[in-house]
Image (cartoon, rainbow, N blue to C red; front, side, top):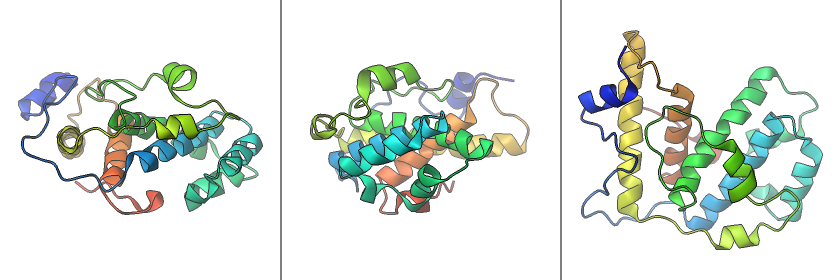
Length: 206
């Protein structure tokens, strides 16, 4: 099997940590920086409960910060559930990868690179995200969306990689170091970022 870098390059997909911006593109994203910052907080909460953090104070915090109405229906069901299956917890933990991609879009992450490793969970918790129980306004108000040309370039790379990954899977030819769940979550995040669908209604068609 080839590496993800070799495989991506064979399809003329950029393998650099940062994709060069798309030339002459200035159409704004469908989401603004405030929306993106709020969504990263919600995803942080979902992932935390996936890691077995007590849901009650998480819910109380979201309500106290006036964010509960922006939590999706499926997320509310997960957070409020009396019991959660192993799969539900696993799916919730993987949402950190969507969160990481959205944090990149508001300049909290320097680069995404190829989807060959999971995000830096310690950095998420200790350095980037608001602490449970503290005000979220400083984080939300400081969010700054990257230029459309940068976002489109990364979005195109992720979409193309997902297309080629699905083809490779059917041929049993996936690169050894490709982390498919990371790629899927990034694609999900960018589809939401550049679309108008509610979080639960996002699709990752290729």
